[in-house]
Amino acid sequence: PAHKGARDLISAFGGPLVAPSANRSGHVSPTRAEHVKTDLDGRVDLILDGGPCEKGIESTIVDFTGERAVLLRTGALETSVLDKFLFGGIRRAGESDGISAPGQLKSHYAPNATLRLNAEAPEPGEAWLAFGPSKYPGLNLSPSGDLHEAAGRLFAALRALDARHDRIAVAPIPNEGLGEAINDRLARAAHRD
Image (cartoon, rainbow, N blue to C red):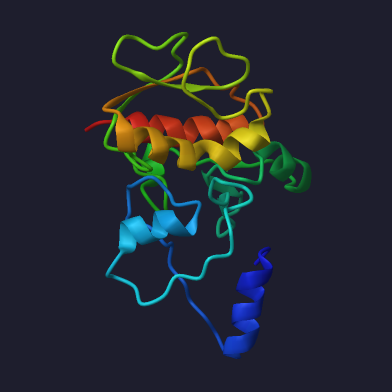
């Protein structure tokens, strides 16, 4: 693991260690210890607080079991980086591939509030989740338009707005680099069956 606290835990334990995600399936992912406590209070005996997640969004998941690599979930490792190292490129999993990894359900990472994506402005009664310069009050994933900063703030911002609002308007996010993973999380968070 990249986090020193996780490496120290493994070293102190001295044996194999298996750890599931620290969140309820389908809900907005936790990026801080207090998010885990809110979601799992009374269900776990201990929460180790290693500080806020550096990347914010989950890992990229790639299936290497076939003849060609298959991207199962976009994530913190951008697909452009994968393409540089995978001869023959990478195929994106489609609906016909079925669900084989976390984060592939159409509705996932979902707040209780309704999300309206690619909004140019909030409508009356909507909270505003901005990206880049914005003239509307609300939360901003990155006032400077930095996708890495936006990825790091995404889930905490969704949780904060969800705690106070029933509807959230989300500004457009460029669909390049980490924006691809951010938009994937937002689309799944907005999906209602």
